[in-house]
Image 1 (cartoon, rainbow, N blue to C red):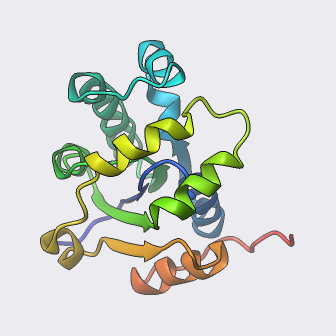
Image 2 (image 1 turned 90 degrees about the horizontal axis):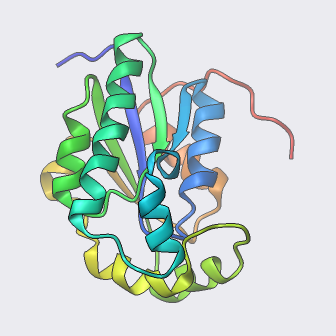
Length: 181
């Protein structure tokens, strides 16, 4: 099936580097970019800030908002890159119902590395105490998701290596010149 629009969902638990990788992919590809956190209702943010894990009933409206954003962009002919934990296959199925081709880039790492990264973050509402619940909820990409083009990548690689791997594996042409660091 030929798609005119592609959505890359950079997924994984908190601390996996979703924002860094999504921003770099967006810059390289020249695609619209969004953070899934922007779609959370205040009630979800309040729960997470208090260290209360979200439940499915908290996540479904949030995921539907994200899917709507993807479909809206697809209708305008715009490919996207977005961050979303997308922890369960059922969540990814809902996101995959967006118009266009939806691929997942799962950033995967050890609990120890993820915890270290979360300890070093500032200004984020997700406390490190929620990492174990996220890891317990995470359902790895299925063989059918991987066969459809989604990727699972090791976060011990540099952001530049991860972005290059995504572009090469998915045969996506970079449109923008990267900015010098």
